[in-house]
Every structure is written in structure tokens, then in C-alpha cells.
Amino acid sequence: MEGKVFMFGFAKKKKSGFLALVDCSDASVQVEKAFPCTVGGGKNSALRIEGVPDLFSVSENSSGRREISTLDVSSVSVRVNGMELASPTDIDSVATLQVGERLFYLISDPETLERAKRMDVSKWLVFYAESGRIEDEVPFARIRSSVTGRGLSGVGIAICPSNFEIGFMFTAVFGGADDKNGALQTVPMLSESAEAVTCPMCWLKFDLGDAMSIAVHESLRGDPLLGPDEMMRFLPTVFNDDGVPLDAAGMPCPDIACPHCRKKLPPNCLDMPQKIFSIVGAPSSGKSYYLSVLIKRLQERLYGDFSVVFKDLDPTGNMLLTQMKNKLFSARRPEEAILAKTALEGAMYERYPRHGKMVALPKPMTYSISKGEKTLASLVFYDNAGEHFEPGLDIEESPGAMHVASSSAIFFLFDPASNRNFKIALGDYPDPQLTIEGRLDQQDTILSEMEVRIKRILSIEPSRRIKTPIAVLLGKCDMWMHLLSKPLEPVISGGILDLGAVDRNSEILRDFMMSIDSSVPISAMSISDNVRFFAVSALGHSPQVIREGEFAGKIAPIPEKLNPIDVEIPTIWTLSLSTDIIPTRGS
Image (cartoon, one colour):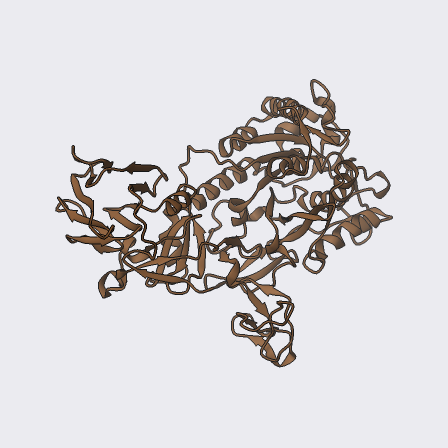
């Protein structure tokens, strides 16, 4: 994709009869139709910027161009299109304006103003001014760290709000070499079709047009970043008649890779909306069992109740989860049903290059949902080691938990068997999971650490709550359901999800948790304003202790008693919020 760089304005020259001031802090718009008009905070200013004097006036000259004349810019730095304002200055249909540290657009073109009204100032694109290649998409407060964290000086880098294409030079906003060498005489512009997508491997953003192809011919084995064993990654320039990129040896190359980590992307994952589902829980809380059962139940329940096909989008990348699922459901003896813990550097993890470092990140497990002939979305699940959320683990050195900030939904798996208050409430209930020695209950700490990390990554105030739905999964419900004051309602009937029943069940479970240990529900509700509580059980029964042999002392499921309880309901609930494939009724 070729970017565009414009000098002091843009090609459109329409006499539109108005001037709009768009504030990049909140996307608010002020419009003035009378010329000349004054911009600033003084008594004569029609377009208001509080806290400053009347800065400049804008008039319309005989050729229909806007002309700026300074009034009082002695007390604050004023830049138009990246340059210190001098009088007079001509601008065309759109220009960037910096007043101190505040950023604005001056717009007099109706089409551009309509696009500006759709900008999302909560997310900013970081891109190369010359090529238009997108590097990242972050909140404004994280732009500087995003750039410097890549080892970049900021020279040649530009920024703009998401859903809008006209940018500011990074060094004009934050200072740097461009500010001294005259490069700020340019105003960068993205293609209007530029779209930032998230790599499901490294969670960095890139433009669809910058995805790399993976060479096929054996003579092209060896990539400068990934090493001699990997096939070369390249930006395609030659295509066959079907539009498939060709490598230097003329071989068709259908596979694509992220331009940041260069890892192969799941097939077709960029051609459909992406939903990231993050499963979080304390170490040994049963996430691997839950995810293995969840995939099987989603395949059965989505089709059986909603005629939605849930299928494997990346058989190679999902192989480990498929093996775990098959191992669990094909086991004949408890020893055969044991699933390994998700170790921090274990088989569910892979090392990826990220910001010049090799870091361990969880492998995405990618599936698709479709109805009829239409594929609706890709669903990306992460089974994250609980250790990634323990306090003290540096988020930059080991960023394995960063996917939670990009998630469409977060599932927090609460393990009652490791909670002291739940053990007391259960008394002498005969389940070996309640007698495990040496386990620390860190679940409230992990939730608190997750909150800190999410809000740090999103650059939001600690008191603000996110919009991302959180499903608190009260696991192993087969051992504690008898403690509830009233039974839970079925939530799916006749191919319809009853949101009212979901809410009523959630209230029962929330109150139940509050009566036993309030720390987890209080923490969850401080993170998000959309929290629901669900009773689930991956096994549906109490496992047994293996008495002899290789696995002596370990706890294992009993294959003939495997009877999962509602593990799929939280995912179906979140799908009902973010897609239209789940028919619903109620609140």
C-alpha cells in the first residue's frame, strides 16, 4: 500500500461556506459559517479553544481559499500543518492544528467533515508517513511508549485517530529530530481504505495491505527474522490470474504472515470479523479441561440450537487443543484422561519476535462460525497460564496476558476448590479436589492484577470501567449447586437465548458468591460494567485419585461419568452481544 504525503493541505478545493473545528480529545465539532471568523478562547472567538486568547482569524480570499492571520500567539505554541503559525498562511479544505499540547482539525469540506465525525479518538493509528504502513493502534496516552518501545526515534512516524486518515507527525506532537530538520512541512495521510487488524499471534496492529506472503519454493527457505528453517516472508508485487501472490521463483503463495512477528496467520482470518475470547484463571484452576470441553460443546450446541456451524479454521494451529479434546473424550480409564497443566513455557506457548525481543506467547486457537453459506466471524481462544497474571511479572518482558485488552470477552474461571470459604461451606463434601494441600488462593489477586494491566494498556483511569463483557465462571458447579437458595433457570429454549433468565441466574450466583467470598465478584464488577455470573462444570462429576502406577497421586476424570454442565452458555451469551447469530428474548 502506498501512502500519500501532502504539503500544507490537500487536493480538494471546495468553497463550502463554513469552517469546522474538530477537537481530537473528544471528537467534538464546532461549525462557523460567517467569515472572517476568530479561533481561540477570547471574547471574539467563534470557534472556541478554552484557556487561550483569540489566536487567529480565518478569512476567505478571492480565490476561495482560507487564509489565516495571527492575532495573539505569544502565550502558546500554535502549529498549522505541523509548522509554527506565521501570518498569513493559506490552508485548503482540511488542515491540522496544534495549540500547545491540544490537537485539532480545521475542516471546510463537507465530505471530510462527515468522515471526521466518525473518528474514534479512543484509538490512534501509528503509521509511517512515507509509506502509510500501520505500526500500531493504541490509546493516545500510549503512543509515545508504543513508538519508543519499538526502538524508534519517531522520525518519519505519523499518528491519526482511528477511522480518519489525516495525521500529525509524531515529532510535531512529542518533539524530536523531524522538528529540527524541516520534515514537518508535510502533512501525512493514510489511504481511506486503511484498516488496522490485530495479529492473533503477537497482538500488534497492521494494515491489511501490509500482510506478508510466505514463499513456497525450497530455494527461498530462510527468513532474516525467523531463521534458516522458515520460508522467506515477502511483500508481494506479482500475482497470478487468480490474484494469488507469486514468490521469486514464480510459485503461488496462498499463505500470509503478520508483518511484525512474521508468523503464519490462520487461513482466511483477515477476511472476516475477529472475536478474541480470553480465558483467565489461577494456576491449576482447570482452564485446559474447560477449553477442551468447550470446543466440543460449542460444536454440538451451536448447530443443534441455532443452526450455526462451529468449525476448525486452523487445524494445524489448533492441533494441541484438538488432541486434548480427543484424549479426554476417548479415554477409557482415568489415567488416559489426564490433561497437562498449561505451563508458562509449555506446548501451548511459542516464542515470537515482538519489539525486537523473543517472548513466550500463548498460541491462538482459531475457529469460525457460519450460518448457511455465510461465514460470520472467526473466534480466537487463548488458554493463558495463570502465572501471566501474577503480580511482579513484567508486562513488556512477558506480554502473554496482553490479549485480554483486545478481547471481545473475558472469561474468568473461578475455582471453588481452592477457596477457603467455599471449602468451609462445602464441609465434608466427598471430592478429592477439596483436599489438595499447598494451594494458594490467588484468584482475587489475579483479577486485581488483570484490572491493572487492562487499564494500563488501554490508558484509562483506575476508576473507569471497561465495556468488554466479563463472564465469571463459577467452576465445578457439580460440587456446590446444592448450596444455592433456589434452582437456576434453563436459558436456551426453542432456539432462543433467554437473556432475562441469564440475568436472573447471574443475580442468584452473584449473591451466592457475595455471601461466601465477596472479593471476586467485587473485583470483577470494578473492571467492567457488563459482568454476568455462570455456573459451569467441565467434568460434571467429582474426579478420583489414582492410587498406583505412573500417575499415582494425581486426580483424574472418570470417563464414564463425564457430563459437562453449561460450559458453552457463557460463550453463547457473549456471541449474542457481539453478533446477530443468536436469537434472543428478554432484557
